[in-house]
Length: 289
Image (cartoon, rainbow, N blue to C red; front, side, top):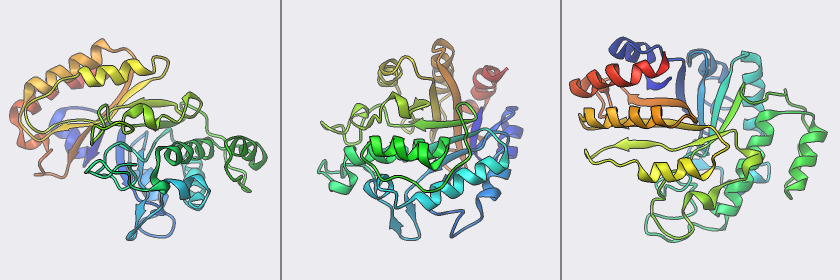
């Protein structure tokens, strides 16, 4: 079980024993700015969950730049820090890539194309490169794989970190935002060789919910473990909590769920939702036992 926010407070609220804390890591954060990688790895419980974002210090590293190796220093530094930590880690690169609110989506909110450097083609290549580096190996072996994809090689040997110690998660939305041709989850799929697990983020912000589109994503890749890297609600809706638990129980490939609680007093905080908190204790916490 995972959570985003103050995990000690969340465990006190819910009775859960959170094993995985979440951080949203900007590009080069931990290497050239902010706290070092070791700070996050040591403070995110037994299995740190790292959402890799290409934004940082007022700029964005585009999918094409990542694919071409221009962001390798960050990936190399992170891989080395993870190996030094000795922990199992979840790495989630460029999550919700089909959500136009994210500046690395191939589409703008109006449905137009964002530009060649942000295309789904470059996204897939960026994800493939990230996957190869995250799992490590000799520079020679990694370069052979990268060049087989038409990408530049790498000169640095990296610690080998195989699945499940290193789990690289591909995390689209089940429904693209905007929901237009070319922005569906399949348009961004990097290929089964470059995905350890995949999943959907699902938030209830209106009191209206349905799981049929998540069901479609779940069925799309039946040989891969499924996850909910983020889920949460901004309304007090215990029915949603119960429905979510039912989905997890009935879908045996769901291997990980992480509740987005956020800061105390924030809109997603379960501490502000007494009926949903009671439902979480009743229906979600037992899933980890």
